[in-house]
Every structure is written in structure tokens, then in C-alpha cells.
Image (cartoon, rainbow, N blue to C red):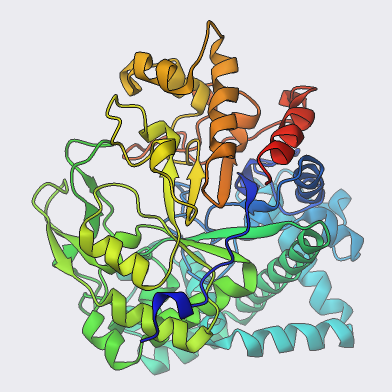
Length: 497
């Protein structure tokens, strides 16, 4: 394997970005999408001098809306599709939507109407485009479209509760269902075609404004996903989906009992024998969508926390080594340029650090983790390195204003002394945190949108280990203070971002 200096992972030019998932964009529907407001957001970023838009995974979610437990590691979430775009193409007439059809959401009805119109118009140019899209993405699209059609047929039941023939992917049963579900399959292919088309236009608009798109890739995939149903040989489970062990993390600052994620663990022996083909396909899709990719739970490439499936908590798990070095070597040889950032938060061992350095991967620093009173804390500014990404907080943290207002979170006296704060308001102190993130030697500084808007804990995106009102936060442009663009632009110039 090449020396770390020879590995083309990511350019380290000083810059800054904002963390905001597209579902949090403003708009009249239940969640934001990649329509007009996404373009306005790119313009806002450019007006401030930001160069990066970071977001969470874009896949289709389950009912809990978590983007970290998606039904596909390739597909886009149809809930993000812009309806305005469909109207512009004359495939959608919202006046004809039947609002009394309560078993389908408004967006679902719109997508169905647009899909029907798309195929009925029979435009040769568009039909050629969707055919090319289908061929290009055939390695996942065929399985995904059938998977989603079967989920719809079986009232959203997970695949491991389907009839045995479909659970076990009997060829005759799959062929029969594919024939019967043609209309549904074509609709799902249409939705994916539209999502990728809209996303490529967003990415191009970002390029025109000097904005890179920064995505997030969970290390694991959901058990109830097309990936697991269609390619079970990559996972440690039997033909019916039963697992002896599942994924998670040990007890930490977030939870005394750890986190029992419940994802299937990988059959690394099988993956190595296929030269990590499944991972190559997965990364190929991410690189089509993003300029930069964060690998969530990077330490899982050195060892995974393996929990007995029968346990309700993660306490009785154990670390099991994984062939992350072999995987990354194969990926870098295959892609040559792999713009990866390692999410290396939590308890990180020397082996994890060695693995990250071997592939020249930037790691993360989070200022909210820095002020425990220990001046040797690696998240403190004087411990930062140019080869890192600094955050005030992440999507799993409280907003910085909420964090500051709860003195159980940090050592307030140390915080005040370290940042040399005077008698200031909590909002002033959020700006001090932003300023210090911007002045960090870390090459990339990322600020959650909530911090730019000076929002409190009620605007938090996610609280790890809880089930409830996560992943639903939205912002409104009226929350933006009149002087924010000017203040951020000043910091950009001052600290050469």
C-alpha cells in the first residue's frame, strides 16, 4: 500500500460550511425538499463566503425518519423530491390532487400523478433518459424497486416477515411478483430517476456558486433494507433474517447502557473474498451525489461493538476486529480519489488513529466536547491540527445556545477563562464559540444552522438513544438575524476561510 502522503483523500484548503439536512429547509409541506429553498440556501451560503453544505444521509427513511436507518444505501428519499420541478415539467397538476384520499400523503399523491403522466406522455427523449438511468444504476435499482413494491403490498411489513418464498428470494416467486407489480416498480424507478436528476441540478448549482456538497454515510445499514434483503450473503444472518449478534456502541457520555443500534453486522470474510464489491458499489453512488463524504462511526473499520441480539442494551457487547485497512486499501486503489472524512468521535484507540493516519483521512473536533476543565482535552483549540474538521456541535448535539444554558454540560469557569469572555449574554457566547471555531487551524470549519440562527434546545435535530421528535426540525428565514451575513463574512475574511 502507498504511503499516506501518496493517498488522494481530500484537499486541505481552508474553508467553512454549514450543517443542514434538506428536510430542515423551509417550505409549506411537512418537510423541506430539494426545490426552490435548496437553491436559496446555496445562494445564502455563497453570500456569507461558505464553501461547503454538509447534510445527513439522503436515503428513504422508515417511519422514525432517521436518516441513519434507511431502506437503501443507494436510493434517494422521494420525500425530498421537489413538486415545483414536476409542475414545471407539466407532469403534475396539483389542482387535480384529491385531498380527501387520506391513506396517501399529499406528496405521495403528487408523485403518483407525475409518474402516471410521465409514462403516458411517452416522450422519447425522457424515456431514453430514464432507460439510461436504469441501466447505469441496475446493480441496486432493480432490487430496490421490487423491495419497495413488496413492502407496499405487505402493508409496510419488514422483509423478514414476508412469505418464505420471497424472504428466501426464490427465483420463480420473485419473477411472478415482478410481473404483477410492474406498475408500482415503474413508479419507484421514476421517483429515483427524478430524485437523481434534481440532485444533479442542485449539485451543479452548488458548483456554480463555489459550494461543495458534503454527505454522510452510516457505517451500517438497516436490517429492513433492500441491501440486506437482496444481498444477505454480505451480512451475519441466516436466510430468515435471524442474527446472533447486532451492532451498537458501548456505554459513553451519551448513554450509561450504551446504544443498541440493532443493525446487521458484516460478514467480513465474504466481503474480502469479493474484494469488497458491495462497498465499491455503495461508494460509487455516494461519489455521484457528493463532493465530500463523512464515514460515520469510522472506528467500526478497526473493530465493531458486537452485542448479543437477545440483549436489550449494549452493555454486554465486545469489540471484534474488522479488516478496515484492507477495505480502505481496496477502495483507494479502485477510486484513486476518495474524499473521505472520518467521524472519529467517542473513545478512540491508538489503532483507530493509526488506521486514519495510514489513509491520510481528516478527523473531527467538536468544541462542545472541549470544556470539561481538562486543558489536555483533544477538542480544545490549542490541540487542533490543520488536518481536521472543527464543529461547534453536530446533529447529535444540543444547539450551542442550549448547550451553554445547561452548566451540567461543561465547566463554565474554564470555558469563560479559555475563551477570555467578559460579562456577555449567552447569545454573545455562541458567537464567541463560532469565532473560535473559525479561527481554529482545522482546514474545515462546519457550523450547524441552528447556531447561526442562535436557536435554543427546542430546535435540536436529534437526541441519541431517544425515540420521539427527532429529525423533524425546520428553520425559517425570518429567524436569521439582520447582521448575521455581515458578521460571518467578516470572520471569513479575518480567518482566511
